[in-house]
Every structure is written in structure tokens, then in C-alpha cells.
Image (cartoon, rainbow, N blue to C red; front, side, top):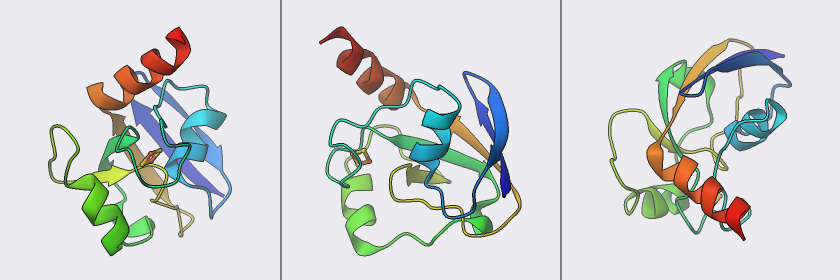
Length: 109
Ligand code: FES
């Protein structure tokens, strides 16, 4: 199990190793977007990893391509559907305005 802390909105809890950040956020009831359903084609799950980058699976070419079109790219940017927690350690992740907006649009349908 790994400990994950989300910021804006704040929530934290333990999740099984192997979980994606998307799965972790959903398990904590957070408003994270996933327009493509987690198939790495929308960038709606864009988050910023603020602590514990080394505990996550590396970025592959597919994630890099989709991430390049996300709004507000910065150090620590990841696609939550592709970043898996691979070590039992603490990870801190900030939700982006982009992912909260993608979630709001899905809920409005
Ligand atoms: S949910 Fe679409 S890229 Fe992650």
C-alpha cells in the first residue's frame, strides 16, 4: 500500500501499489477528469506530482505525446491515467484546473 495525498481539493488515504493516480483520485471521491476513459488520448486527467515522482511509473512516449497538449504544463506534470504508483511510499499530487473542468463537463451531461 502507498499513501497518497491530493491537493485542491485536499484528500488523502492509502491505495494499493499498482494503482494509477486516476484510480487513487476516484477512490477518494475527487473531481478528476477522464474524458477518454483512461485510454491516454484526452489530457483531461492532467495532474501535477509535487512529491514522490520516483514512486511512479516512468512517462512513456504515448503519455509524453498527449501530455504535450495539456494546459499549464510544468515540472511534475503527469497524466493520472498513465502514472502508476510502483513503490510503497508517499505521493503528493495537485489536481489541475484542466482536470477539474473536464470532470465538471462530464457531470453536466
Ligand atoms: S483520462 Fe484521458 S488521457 Fe488520461
